[in-house]
Amino acid sequence: MATSSTTAPSSGTAAGPAGPRRRRQPTSRLLGRGARNIGALLLALLWVFPIYWMVNSSLQPDEVLYGSEPQFWPSPFTGDNYTRIIGDSSFWAAMRMSVIATALAVAMALVSAVLAAAAISRFKFRGKGPVVLTILVIQMIPAEALFISQFRMLDGWGLINSVLGLSVLYAGASVPITIWMLKGFVDGIPYELEEAGQIDGCSKLGAFLRITLPLLAPGIVASGVFALLSAWNEYVLALVVLQRESAATLPLWLARYNTSFEATDWGGLMAASALVAIPVIIVFLFVQNKMANGLTAGAVKG
Amino acid sequence: MAGTEVSAAAPVSAAPPVRRRSGRTRLQAFYPLLIGLPAIAIVLVAQGYPLVRQFVMSFQEFGLAQQFGQDAPWVWFDNYTRVLSDADFWAVFARSIVFCAVVAGLTMVIGVLTAWLLTGVRTWARVAVQSAMLLAWATPHLSSLTVWQWLFNPSSGVVNAVLVGLGLEGFDNHAWLLDPLSFFVIAGAVIAWGSVPLVLFLTYAAMTQVDTSLYEAAQLDGAGPLQRFRHITIPGIATVLMLVATLQIIWDLRVFTQISVLQTAGGISSETNVLGTYVYQIGLGQGEYGQGAAVATIMLLLTLLLTGLYVRQLVRQGDDA
Image (tube, rainbow over the protein chains, first blue to last red):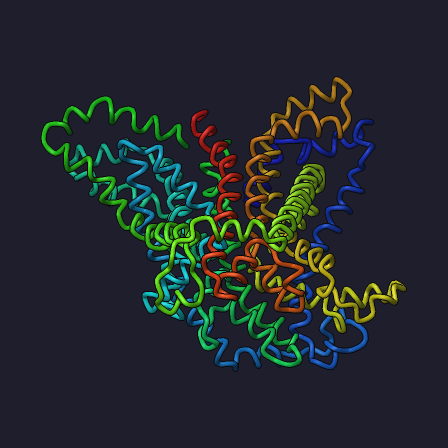
C-alpha cells in the first residue's frame, strides 16, 4: 500500500511534483504547505509514540520506570526485562502454542481456499452467485456472536484447551476471506494460459496445477500472511477455548501475565509486548503492499 | 475483477462446452463442488454448525443443568422476552451503538483528513506519517492494549505525569479505567489508533486516483482547497468511503478484545459491557447459555443488517466491472 501510494501522487492529486508550483497560487494560502508539513509531523509523532514508549520502557530498570519523573530516553539502559521474559518458560509454552495453532490454521485455510477459489473462478456452475454471496456474508459473522456454541461444540468433542480445536476455529474464520482474496488473484491470471495447456494435453486440473498455481504464488503468500496475522493476533477464541492456565497463546499469555502478579511487572510487560509485536511487524512490512491489494482487489476498482 | 472473470469465461462457454458435453458432463458438473469440499467442510464445522446450534439453543432452556447432561426443554421466545425486557440489556445495547458511532465516526474523520493532508505535504512528511501508521497498524492488539494501559497507569503512567507537569494536579494518581466515561475514552483511543491507518491508506490510494484535470478546472473556476475537497475529492472517493465506513461500523459494533482486556485491568464490567462482552458474561461466565445465545443472535442480526449494505456495495461493484 505505502509503496503504491508513494509512487501514485505524481499522476494524482495536487501533491507530488505539481505541488510546489501551486503553492504560490493565492487559493492555497488558506493552509500553507509549511503548516501542513508540521501537522503531518505532529500526527506521525502522536501515532508512533505508544510504540516508542513500549520500547523505551522495556529498556529501563524498575527504579526509573516507577520513579517520580518519566524518562523519555532509556539512559540507564538495561536488558533485564527481556532476559526475564526470555527466561520464562510459560512465555515459550505460549510461543509454541501460538506457532502451532497459527501454522495448522494457515495450512488448512490455504489448501482448502486455493481449491475453492479455483472452483469459483474457473468453473461455471449453477448457484455460483449465491455461493460468492454466502462467502461474503460468512466473512462478516462476528466471532463474538458464535463463541458460546463453538465452546460447547469443542467441549463435547473434548477439544477444549486443545490447539487442534483452536486452529480449526481459526481456519474456519479465515477460509472465507482467504477464498475471497485468492479468487481475485486467480481471476487476474488469464484463463487462456490454462486452455493452451489443455490443448497440449493437460487435464483441466493438471493445467491449473501446472500453469496457474505457480503464477498464483504471490497471491498465496499474501493471503497466507493475512491468515497468519489474524491467527497470531487472535484473542477472543483463545480466551474461550483455552480455559486452563497452562494453555495459552501469546496474546492470552500477555493478558494473563498482566494480572498474574500483585504488582504488575510493567518493564517485563513492555518487553513481552515488543517480543510479540516484532515478528508481526517484520512480516507485515514485507507483504503489506500485496495484502492491501488483495483485500481491495474485489472491493475497490482502479 | 468480475470483468476478468467474464472475459475469461466467455470463450470457454462459447466453444469448449460442445466438446465437454460429449462424455464427461455429469462428472464435470461435480468438479467445482468436489474441489470446494475441504473449504466447505471447514466452514461448516467451525461456523455453520455452531451457528445453527446456537440459533436452536436460543429457543431452549439451556443453563448449568443442561451442561451436565439434562435435556434442554423448548422455551421458544422466553429467552428473547427475558433479554428484551431486561434494562441491563438495553443499557448495553445503547452503549454499544453510541460507542460504535463515536469511534467509527472519529476514525473516519481522522483517517480521511489525514489522507487529504498527505496529498499536500513534502515527501519526508508523507513518509513519516505512512511509516508511523504502518507500525500502528501492524502492532498486535494485545501489545498495543498493554502499552496503552501503561501510558494511562494511575501512578507511573506518562499521561498522568505530563498532565501533572502541566499544572493539572488533579491527575496525580488518577485512575482512568474506574470511571466508565474515561474507560470508554481510552478504549476508543486504542481502537481508533489501530484502525485509522487502514482508513488512511485506502482513502489516500483512492484520492490519488481522482482525475487531476478536475482539480485544475475547479481551480480555474476559483474554487478554494476546501471547496475542491468538498466537491471533487469526496465525490471522487465516495465508493471507497462507503466501504471503509461500513467496515469500521461492523468492527466497532462487535468490539470485544479491547473492552474485555481493559475490564480485567480495572474497569467495572457492569458499567462497561458492550454486546460482545455481555454475551461472554451471560453465556460462559454465568452459564446461562440459552440467554447468551439469544443476545448473540440479536447481535448477529444487527451485524447482518449492517453487512447487507456492505455486501450490496460489493455486489454492485462486481456488476459494474
